[in-house]
Image (tube, rainbow over all chains, first blue to last red; front, side, top):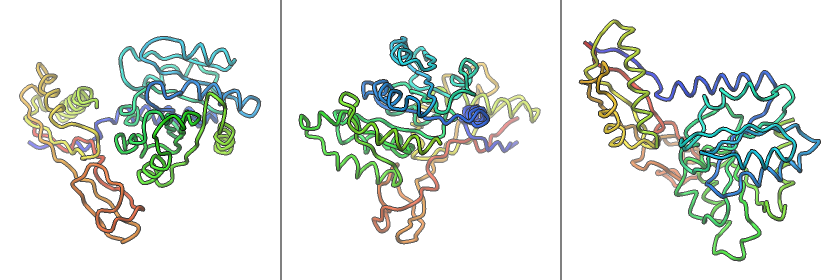
Length: 214
Length: 114
């Protein structure tokens, strides 16, 4: 006997992601899922971004890491609400992990929520958590071959931030190649060049964010 | 990527549907998996066989329909299909503006139960 099923295999995650999205929308929170490889500078970018957005937007952060609370402590020092999720081995955040901590955030008082995903260029791109957009951070020292090696991450992202631009002169990396390959994977992707060490380029990124959120 | 958790989801969804329809055994499950879904079918089949023991799908086989990447090119206006998992330009004309419509599927189509 044949039984029709026709169900998406990751439907459970999609359903919870949709619930999260409804909660965010009801509270007027814009949500960014920030993804990158380990060490690309996600937490440094958030530190710079939060300082720059001070008084322009009310920001909060959910930190996803396999273990440890260092990132949450760094963000907490800036005086914004922060929640640390330890995945205990899982290589990405999923919608349910986010759903479980939403009650701990003062959502009504937040305008922009960053969800810093686990450092990984593969798995986070597969799991929606209820975000308005995915943003990818690539440090140029990772190499200009990354868009073509990890295409899904680039295809899924609305913006690409190239970090460590101050180190360009010490590398053989072609920024043009990264941009060209990223744009062929995602023609509408918005690209920023920044240095979280010097602060170069951060205001272009935060100006764009403010327009998106407001 | 997450073949083991995907295999577990397949077992959960299929088991639920089987019970709901009033049957007690799953003989086979047919999946549609796009080539650009990121799933390694060998790893999925291996994980499924490891996880199915002591479930109502213990004797079940998995049949996988692989779906190629296909879409519509905005430059030449043609529908295309390709053997590649990822494309950077239209396989027909090389145009850079196109929409991918198939190849990301990850779903259970149907199953044989008794």
